[in-house]
Image 1 (cartoon, helix red, strand yellow):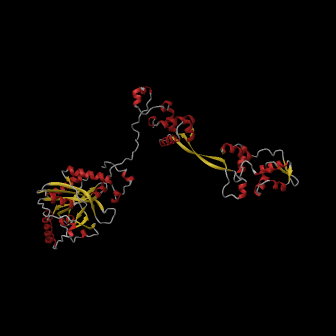
Image 2: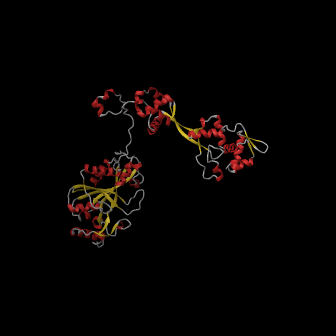
Image 3: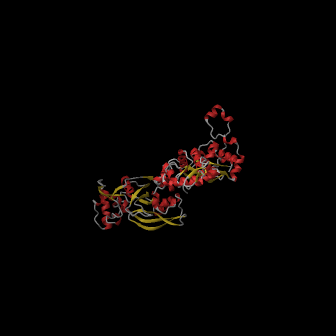
Length: 509
């Protein structure tokens, strides 16, 4: 820690503590002429840097009770109407009004307006104060009856100062304090806490090299100083470029959106063009043309979201629908129903967008991709969502084969930092042959299943009017996000916890 690391406020506090050793926060404010907020912040900074220590000092303050408590009896309330006139003093005043030096107790009781409790306590305290002495059946005034009691001395001082510290009481006031403590309704004691600031050994070392001129250093060079030349006579504070900067919690792109943009850039770098389409699709494009029979379990309502009272009125090219009908009847051995194909669903994958694009554009060569939301009627769990993103890539050519597809997959994964890839045969309704890919994740120390892939079946491509081979692969984006951000629960991606979002690096490795 050096002087360079200190703010102007810190320097001022340190110089003050060097001269005064220990001060509380109020004393620092008055001595440094800094605001209470500036002193508080300066103390926190210095405490964090280990230059000052803060201890708690407790002080007892004695105050006069301004009014009786609500839980006192009516008799007690009478005794605290005037705190400067104690019952014993009121008794003495009543005796003096008679002009006599002695009086019987029965006569005295009739003169005043004291309660029984006040009268009894007043007589006892007057005798204790040697204002009265007992005679033969009477009470006699002494020559000391005008002398104030310790209680009166204390109450008189408190009435002038409003409150007084216990440590500042004189011996006589301490005696009055001890007596009044036993008499409810006159005084109260409150504990006031203050914070005492003192220099640590490191603080003393830094403070010893500080100079008054350090406080008047200027940290900002203004245009006025440059124009008038005042900067020549100013002393500027040095800048410590190693000091930590302030953290700003500014807005940023959601990590999932950043990953989508990264994958989009990867596809484009590999020569792909992006396509998109509606999230609402007819069963024809979502299932039928993809060679999924109309009684397939994937079409059940427990797996797919159907839109009630909404059918697709768009006319499908009769050539395409006839080919689909023929393939279903020939391969699946049932009569394909055109009306069932008009039902609408929230798309269960992005392939209907792809196959519709191919059927409309009849391209023979090309690379296209899509990234979009898909919907499955599944139970939410740590690895399943009802709504998620799917990535899909398509390559069309007359000479591509399954080896090309595996090579594309390895290239795609390598751009995501996943270099260990393996494949094995599997089954998908609309690709043949079909493969499943797995990648090895070093952070997890295990193989993780990712995308499915294959070559579109002739029943699919020929129905859409495509004669060349179509390589296809795709899968869930959230699975990659879980690997990228080290998550065990897919739902954390959509919790939007600021504590997690703010800790995610902009460019994770």
